[in-house]
Image 1: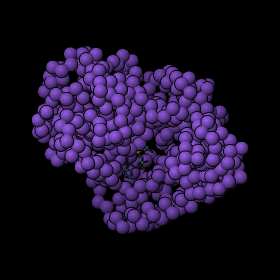
Image 2 (image 1 turned 120 degrees about the vertical axis):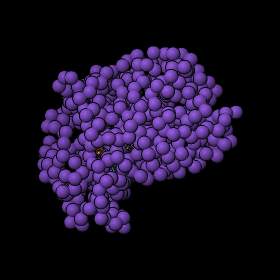
Image 3 (image 1 turned 135 degrees about the vertical axis):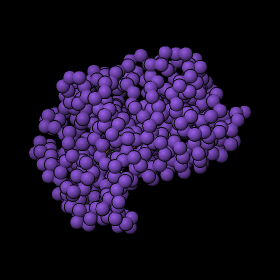
Image 4 (image 1 turned 180 degrees about the vertical axis):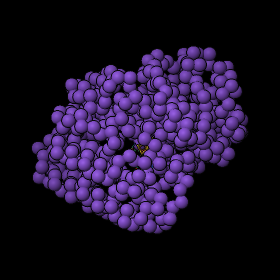
Length: 510
Ligand code: SAH
Ligand code: SF4
Ligand code: F3S
């Protein structure tokens, strides 16, 4: 049985010489030296901005060290994922690494030998969920002291979170950040043998490692990272700190991955990036998302999506390429955040309401059928009623068919978190309700337009509520339920829509 782990002050774990010597003892492999970089710093705007001009290298030679390839024999792992698609996809990489070490996946947390919580830091409630889950895990650790509990993902990149874990949740065995995923084998091994909590978080992003193993969750739809990080530094947002600077994968590597997915029978690929249309800006040659998408139209895969774009980087060439259609879907998720120029300015969004409306006009001219969806924050510090109403107006003018709406949540280390805010929470909640009512009304109206139409559904499986009903999504990302035989799962099926609901459509196979 292992001894109870003792919490120690964070600096002790983070000093490079100490940590490095421990790792070297464990692992003689070149990898440690190759990838080990400096350790932990809290978010720092000035330093983060300076990172922009540094080079990124790409590696194709990743290997699981030989002494760790069967470390997980007869053992299981469980990963719970919070947050965005980037995190979902990171989970697929971690599942790939765990599997390559001989571990089996389990969906029963109570039975697992290793529990990984892949966390999100975007809003306070995302973090609260993780701390709540830790309350459930603590008794499991008491029952089985050999259980390894690991916290990774975006929360690990925050100093306050790491300190809180060290002080209040000393039973956690391992904390590692978003830039340390490839080090999972070494870190698991270290956690197995170390008496102290193992913390390895690099504030600076590393290079791109191409050949990490992946265990994808689906057989029809796949995520493909095309870039990592974000350089936009919106004043409310933690992502540029938790994910590091913008780094684009090389076009050939993305194209090869999509080709392989097509060969494996995948029907839909979503290209991922926090700021996906900044793709290519950091490459040493001129290349953008438009060119990449153009190249991907040549691949025999029925559907290609991308998320999330920033209005500022949505150029005409991209619109041209999307307008030509083929396997590129005409659904564009384009976060606007606010309809007020003053709020957009203090958010440092670098676009105005007019810029956004002009872009929407351009998109609609070239792609009249395109579905537009968005993200909106209400109750930004000192947002006035009039400014909020400008947001409502803009939502109506654009006619968004769906929106993810949020109450502003201060994130430590970001500029906005230091600002005074005179908007009471009650007012923020009321604004969110009013906005949601409008968005739902528009969503329903958009759904109603489909009644009587024939749409193509990529059938994903049985509906959650009724095993006789199949469900899947249209090209414009509308959820459709219809009765049909299970043999249709995995196929593109024409369905006539008979009824619209707020978030889904009912139909029959034709
Ligand atoms: N990279 C994407 C998405 C970022 S996170 C983009 O820029 O569009 C997803 C959404 O979370 C954001 O679009 C924003 O609406 C919301 N968000 C980010 N930080 C937030 C905060 N501090 N409080 C509330 N919502 C936030
Ligand atoms: Fe955050 Fe998106 Fe702004 Fe980047 S562009 S800072 S991810 S909201
Ligand atoms: Fe959350 Fe990190 Fe994604 S903060 S939204 S998991 S990039």
